[in-house]
Length: 452
Image (cartoon, rainbow, N blue to C red; front, side, top):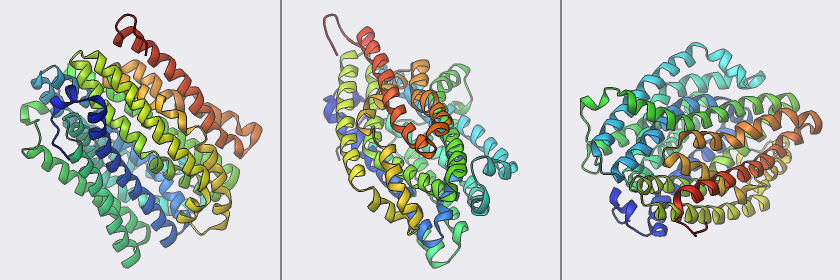
């Protein structure tokens, strides 16, 4: 793969540079998603289907804390991309140093709180009945590795902001590959059960952290910071916070969604329905990897060119990113509609789960072909530093539509009401995002007499 510098984001053809950015991001997300997928398969076959549900209870808690790192990373990376585009490198360096300080401060604090109140948190997120004990084991160990994951997720977004997607891809591959190897050793060979699964996950986070910080200390990174950059600056912290809050709010809503879904499904269908949701959730992470890769590749391109006031390239990047993402999401839709039972059988031999999950999966992915507009639209506002519309559009799907729907529809349609909430919220959020994105493009990026 050809070497990419930050200046290439403003000079190479949009389609070409988007592919250069999106392919490594997609591969990284694919490998990370495969890790989660295969990890779930290993746990399901080597420990049992209840262990799948237990991990699903823990994920929203650990991911929310780790998402602080991603939020700080994406918020700061938007500043860094625009600063590099405007040739104000001093601001980029100060921003990066502040990102590290903020990530350490918040994640370590939350991990301590999470360990103190572990029992009540696990129960709140659906860790009830037979699910509680394995969830407690997994939760306690994984939380020790979460600060390393948060720092890694923060650093990964900065690597992409520098225009180095290949290194970002490697960073995402390292924990995935190492987790699978450690899973095999700790669970299958040493028979450590849930403890083995948890330690494999935490150690993989640490290995990822080591690689990312090697990158920033090496000659490959343009961002060479010193101790003065770690001192928090109010204006930069405020800007990181306003933009990063978009990502944090999205993950907070995801965690709340898990809380509601696990509890609602446990009440409606017990451990079987919670396990079905865990499998469908893994497919949501895995199947969408190329679309998410396009979104990640789009962010630094839009941010850099917006900072350089090259609005024509920004507009082109929006159109091309939506086109690529729509094609990929349609392919994903077709595959999942055709093979849901075969996919389910990869995770478990539990006949009750195999019978229920395929139909649930079809409902969840029913509106997949149209979500490209929603993802790219929300990402655009975040990349250019417009925090409020980015926040509102990011929360539209799950916060404004999905959560109210899963609280209302099951009262009339039972468990079916939970699953049909997915496509309904996808359609509604896409329509809202399309309206505001088109309005923004016409008012900001188009010259007179042009149409989107």
